[in-house]
Length: 425
Image 1 (tube, helix red, strand yellow):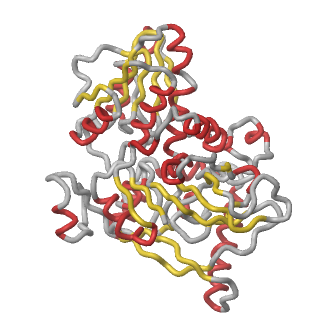
Image 2 (cartoon, rainbow, N blue to C red; image 1 turned 45 degrees about the vertical axis):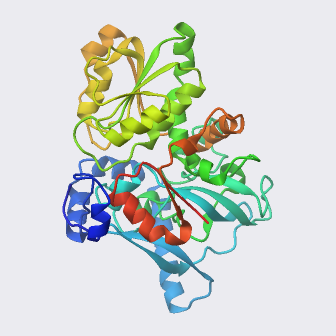
Image 3 (spheres, rainbow, N blue to C red; image 1 turned 180 degrees about the vertical axis):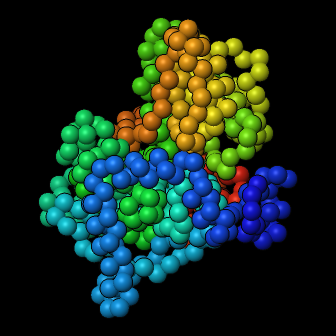
């Protein structure tokens, strides 16, 4: 609970005591960005390669905006912009120019919130506001360049949140999050830090590498169910699929332990841990323990067929542990609860450094995995499970709204305790 309130009393009253998140105003947000202990590593990574390309792109973006203000030549569209104080509003901005030979223009028809969106909307991350918001979507293809072969206007597609060219060595190896054709950490919906590629909560979205990026939505799969496949569902999948099958082959009845929020309150939602549990079930796990101190997450986990717990006390070490706490203390708890020859994975962290019990890990022979998802490489596998009826991400969605109502819906998601909000036409 921090800083400046930004909702009316009716919104605050809609949540249980202590469940309402307060947003940082402009001054505190900027001070927090400058003081954030994760900001320096993030900046270093974003500039460690192709810094000139990033700078040229940002300069071109600024020059284009200035030119469009002086002499508007392009059509206009609306885009949702987030500002400090959890303020969200539609802004009238220039529409993307006609696509180049290998590019496409798409129209988002189902957009989902990310677990990080709450922290970003509250001004609690290294990503400076204002920014065009949203990075998980299913879209309809509106226009394609002459060289595009895999999609055509009218197709429904999943748009990966990361930008990747599909042709560099990293992309060809399936390491699409580290595409060398664009500057590091190029993403939709992260504003300046992501390279100003725009946000998914907009009428139109430019896709620079259509054949490499866009994944056709299988017939019979609801766009609302697949909206979060662009990031969070795929993140849950990659944390599980690379490790669980081999562990189940060794012990088919082994338990899986998933940790959500255990102690220190972070302004994050917890869909990735729930998606990870669903993927574990789809891949054959029979017993999944889900620990989270929040009663509504415990109820949700129980409805999904998991064994809910408020803490990890009394639970024995498990061969496979997913640390969704995003805290240093939570990571230590996860590693201490990983069984000998077990695996612990972490979807993400918001800290610059964290201590790990290396002696314990060495003695138990624990493997620890931390990293970002290669979304484009993972998305087809996730859609395959959905098409076969083995994975149902829609069961994690807690709130629905219309895209026209995005300012209010995203604001309520950010200041409240929704796990996953999906907006559709």
